[in-house]
Length: 384
Ligand SMILES: [Zn+2]
Image (cartoon, rainbow, N blue to C red):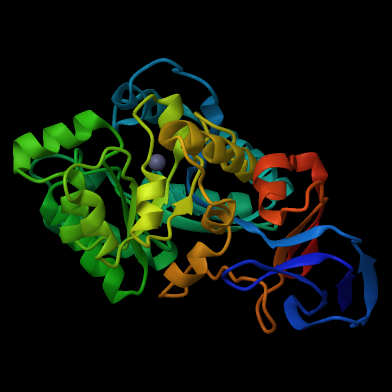
């Protein structure tokens, strides 16, 4: 048992600042209050105690080729099966992949992330490899698998169904790359099987303008319309919405992940965060491919804070931004697959303690903090 004393806690889903102590026992927050002091005392005088980060979207496998292919187009870089990334993955040994993934997971842990949602390539073996790599690291990978049987204009749907069921025995969900690579029949199998088993179905949509134009020309529907009408639980990117796309998403049950730094690296556009927030959406923030970006949520937060100012010529609310990296997932996690909690009595102890440099705790984290300013990372029973 231990008590964190004298910090500013960002409590609950809405990250409300409160000067209270937190008592943790056996991985859970058992008490929050003014004068509590039980077990070992960790005095963090004036520091900010914030829920740990969730990286809402990452491809950790391409940690093996950091910065390779810089300057190429989106499809030359990451489109299956011939993008730079897929060729590198096919040629890497299991040991190389495991070492690179471990390094990225430690980077995430040390920068305050305790959960990440990964689009894992390589079928069943790819999922197993990430599970093995993460065994001794204090982080929870939420692994979304895929299979080569998904691709092509005329896939064998029985094979697809069998592959999805096998994957779901060990994965937390399924994530094909995008509608450019799969048919709507394949999408339906993925979504139906995930729903039956309370797992997550996720897909990239509208990452580039050309994705959207091709979809409109071929199907008369945008990728976002296809994502919503196929009932995917989670849509990633939405960087290039058309017409009513965002409205349609906001009135659906789909949750959204945006990746501003990855979009910038690939020069595919700026996600419309201010509009999404005005519509009442509660997106997550992700760092996307490790080949493009470091998986550090502090860097993503600062970049996004400033990018939105430049893009909209107005400010994004830093509280809303911080929620994208911390507590928004708590309200999305209907199937309890991700199991990320906010700071409240009875919840898992998953928080980060940051030095404080400013009176605004949200700007302190989004605008000031660097990895070296993290005092402690608490992930259930583990203190880093
Ligand atoms: Zn991605």
